[in-house]
Length: 436
Image (cartoon, rainbow, N blue to C red; front, side, top):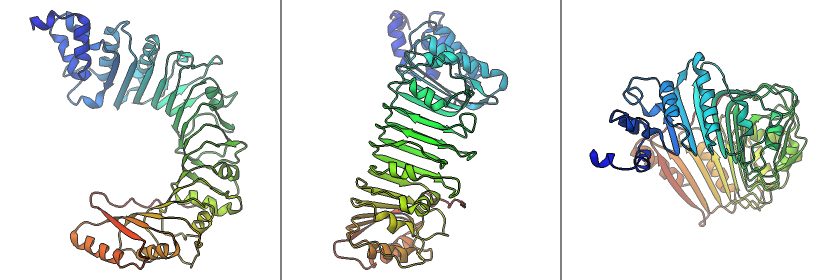
């Protein structure tokens, strides 16, 4: 112990910073000198999920522990602060979380992650939106904010907002926020809604490269603009907008879509046309690919697309959209189908020129009516197939043997191979009860 005490504070702090904060905090009892050293670390990570026995065994609440850590760290420079709590924070304690954010701003942090659950909304300090140093900001699980007129985040590259509601009414929050982030590269929004309704949403940024929008409650039809010429990745889950006035997605490489479309209220034609340069496309629900049936006349030619993934998540459907979509994909190499196969009700032609070389089937059971028959149809109708990859569900060797025998007996050309992988640990994904 005397040998360790002879070390300089900086050396001890460096040693302690390599330990989890829970373990480092135990050194507070060694001496008065050690009382504060555990908190002096450039990367501060506090997570009550790491502490099942009461924070550091001392019996204090997580909020008290965070407050004490921030208090003893004084003006020590910190680059990264992450605070997570899986336990619900009482209504009277939400002000502590706001003060944690203020503390982080005072220390000019570069990366801030606050992920907490509270009984009441947590106010984001106004200073958050004029911070010149912050590079990555993540706020999760129930925040409220008001964007000031002088909002400016010159260093922000990553913004993650999960259930953050903005009170601003005079303008589109997204448009205002993005215009104040000149170097923003990644934006993620998870929320039932993030602003007062009845307002057009505008995503406009020349620097944005990755965009994720997941709206969990379908509450209103909005107009939505995508003016993002350098966007490479889009994940978009929402009620399809009333219209898309501007869609600039000319650099898009990958798109994952889960959209609910109402024919008389949604008009996604501009969005569909704007996706024409995409290389990898995933349609995450039957609702989404039915969009292509409803607006079939507007389907563009996807000249760059080499991988298409579709989800079939309930049985009362046919395959009308698939030949229609494949005909618009002259460079398609891989077709992925997620969900149990069901027999088509009609004999459809997929075209002699359909270029698909790899077919991947997920959640194959081999016992459902029409499942094997529909696989045979795909192998017959896709003339360029070289490989069929099947992820099958089986719990014992007998089932595996039966499925393997059935699949290898499927008629096919000598150039087409079938590759079977079995999954035993997880049940097939449950069908979602969705109706248009």
